[in-house]
Image (spheres, rainbow, N blue to C red):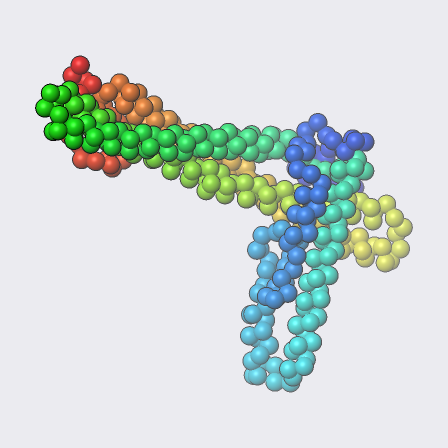
Amino acid sequence: MSDGIMSKAATMEIPISSNGVSGTINEDESLEQDLQQVMVSGPNLNETSIVSGGYGGTTEGIIPTSSLKGSMSQPSSHPSLTSEEMSRGLAVEKFDMVKKWGINTYKCTKQLISERFGRGSRTVDLELETQIELLRDTKRKYEGVLQLARALTAHFYNLVQTQRALGDAFSDLSQKSPELQEEFGYNAETQKLLCKNGETLLGAVNFFVSSINTLINKTMEDTLMTVKQYETARLEYDAYRADLEELSLGPRDAATLCRIEVAQQNFQAHRAKYEKLRGDVTIKLRFLQENKVKVMHKQLLLFHNAISSYFAGNQQQLEASLQQFNIKLSSAASDKPSWLEEQ
């Protein structure tokens, strides 16, 4: 029996130890949070739909009730239906939907508690779950880099604004202090040139921040949404597998055989859903890795060239770095070399 219901060779069933912890299972989230996830996706009775796949599933297999209402309301198709009969039909439909959701939620909650308290087993794809955990860890670290880069942008913006104000003050004093006109003039020019280069550097850092933000909050987040669907499908798959195994150990009367047949059908459907989402996650993780390397190679090179050129006082190289990555300069380019380059 176990050979018929096991997943492919890439996955295996791992029993949960007596303390509810497996060496390969991440326990970052609490049981209460998992139970909330099980319960949160309840049926929407305001816009009734017939849902297959249980809580947290995708929209596959969803038939909007509006289409059913449209077909039921056509006099030519159902001339004998009264408004009372149609209302009764919708009520039955909603009841069946709530019933299916309740059964699915009960099975998944039972499976979740069984896993956590060491009375059951779960299917684990060790390689895939390692990649998923690595993605989550990478996302956390990239979020830290993004936060620091935003802080750098804010601080440097304030510095540039201060340099601009200081340059204006030196320029004003140069005109009003004949005895120090030359000294104030040099400092005014220096601050204005530093301000110009700072604005150019801000353009590079802002581009860096924008690209990292897109990578984290769009590309990575899209993959993690598919991962959440996969994890939900895994829980449902194991719940219906455990249900089938439990029924198979019982008596073999006519009623039980009928229930086993239904359980087998449900199990096969959830196994197909689980394997499909496992394939989707594998593909998205591979494409994400390729995209991440490509994006970060470009952004890290830009960041390094822009920062080093700025602090070396090399205005031409700084502007060339932005042109290399097709970044529009924040101010018009000047052929005049930086004052720092002349020293």
